Image (cartoon, rainbow, N blue to C red):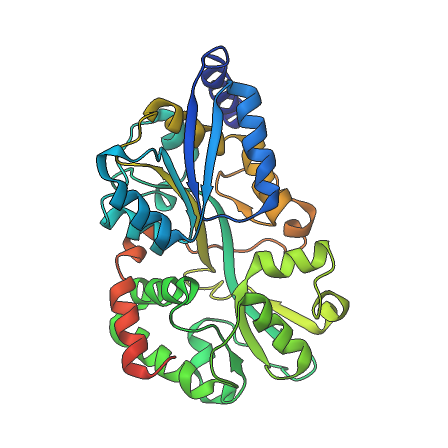
Length: 336
């Protein structure tokens, strides 16, 4: 009942602008064709036109900063908590007040100063070769045990997913334990860090890797449609949601914030509120195999196939602040 009330509030809020002319200028580093439906539905519901500039997150942050007070940017939308925090630190976002966002988005999935909000999630979990691994790691910390020497594949330390995972380990276990973990992972590498998440999964199929870490949506996508070098043999891969008796599975976040000098501030807030609606949340899940950020919203079939699990509810705003320490640890232990 509560969800229905909130959805009605959002619909009523959007309806008040349906007759109003206006635009919202979106700077986005999300490069997913399925997001087009999000934008077109928002435009239809509100009469507000979305103008979109796409690019890499760091480039967009630098562009907004360089444009200064004259920046046309209204909203920055990007992937991963570390990039959202980077935007905040660069001074390109602003705090906003929205009752809808506060009610819809859990506190641990939003910035402590309301400069950014998470709208979709991916769990970063353990995958393994069923044929070769009879005792898969049950926790992230297990991955550093000597028994997995020469078996583990992971992305490079320059990748934001790597940085945020280590940042979460710092927050949950402390800096000393996080350093020991990183040292153990480096000692257990089956190969030098390389490629993206899909490559970590393909490594399990090829036999180059026995255990990998990747985001769930890469695996769910291969369940939903054909992914070369993965889907045909996906049954060979086992899945572990780590730390189910401890902190829970680490969650990556895709989120957005209102730009510091947004010329269309109210339209920007309405866009963020739309992203928190049931309709938009279902698009994130159905179109890109992500977990909704709003509790109680139904998941797509491919995401639901992954099963239920305990998610780490650590404050991601705090996690993001650990990224510099995480990068320092990576450098010290020789994680390329």
